[in-house]
Image: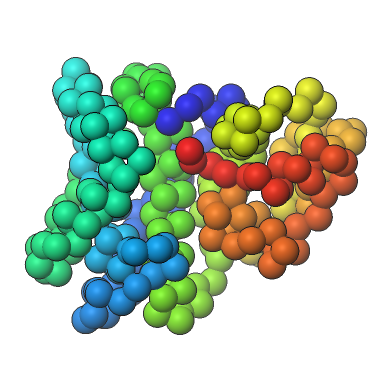
Length: 257
């Protein structure tokens, strides 16, 4: 995971952890009530089982990174050996397990991750993909991934979930991922300051960047989160941009490689 290039030191770990746990519990309640995990989701080739298997595997990697950081090289080598198809193969392997076993593994793993990220000192780094992270960043990262893959399952089952204040963590990662977005698109990073103003679930405004910035993005927090996680095309959001770089960012926005 590349350096996001944004200071997230103002993230309150305990608050973010509560949101992470709540996000997992909400998805758990949904999939536990669904008997058919073979239903295809919007992710090409991935069923509900694949989505849960992916989250479970990611949690297992977090535990290795936090508990036995010296062993994380093994994870990196496995990912490198699998190439671009590693996530698909890993999800397929997990999806082949019995539904009850996979569900229990995911439940146990996410509970252990929450405990591990709650107990580790805030300033203590641990290895991740391409960088060293701390709990300050890993907690919202796990929340973002749980929310994004959960969105695929909710969409599959035709269930609408009301947005919550936990989206602010996802939005913050989206803002932090601006440099990553331009890097992944092989474009030079913008030099001008940006202002992002999003409307939260309760009508509140979440803002990042100087108010005098000429590059500006505005819209609903939910749409911004759906956009940066590639769960909704730009044309289907209410997001608006002022400035050429701001418009380009919305077109290529991402929070992961």
